[in-house]
Image (cartoon, rainbow, N blue to C red; front, side, top):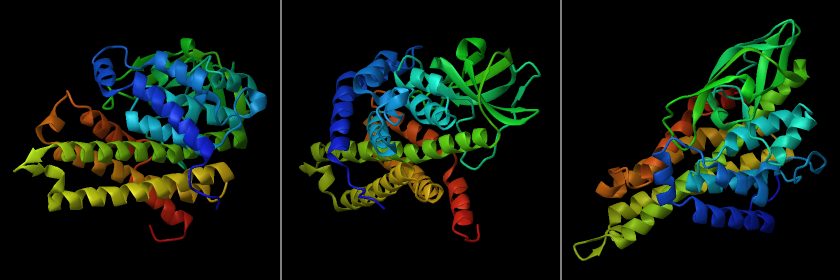
Length: 364
């Protein structure tokens, strides 16, 4: 295991992302945007992708990226969790780009890495690592794709769809221009990360990987997605604790700060302990992805722990904020919705615990 502490480079990256999000995606801007039909903030995304360079962070330099690792990607995810910014980071940078890099699809990787295109991996957002290759999309004799995939993350703003499909020769990974598909955005529980149904009817497609390579590329994308999601959940939990402490220090009852009451201090201490555990699990998962060491185990541990921690932290934030925490005018509800949506994204905690049991030979 390498050093799990944040490096100077990672801290510099964090500072750049945090400053940008504080300026462009503060609570008031976020609350105003989710009430509109726009949903995603694509102007903010272009700044993140082009100026900060998050679109190609973990892409090799020869493919137009920056040659960083999953550790740097995880730092960005953590900051995006702190802001729940409505940008297609998970679908494009983490899922689609990872699948294409492992499929050796250089032409399409360059489009995503430079930020000139947004990608989406056409699998349901609830798909967990180890779920097997999907068969909802089939390949015709002419090489076109037909089928329907539900609840695809970030598909409504995607330019490229990375589609796993079952053909006569076995599994294959294809790229479809989004304009050749019918993408129907759903009413998402989490309004800061939209999902959509994708329908294909004899859609032209480019085969980028087949057989074992296609299956391995898909599994790598799902593992990476689940591992990086743990860092996002850490960011969500950190925001919940930080904002709750700030509120309780400034809220007075009986002539003293509410945060000084012993029972509340105990609850905050428990949240802090949970946050430390979440960060350790997320950093371990990111480091495992970067080094290729015990990846399935590290990812399963991180998701089994961090998903419920993020939910608990946001629930406590709403309750400890009192009446204001229950209103739409306060952003706490957006963080709870993100935490609850993340709890089923890329596998539930129970699914990850069961997989972990198999991986370490424990009765499930």
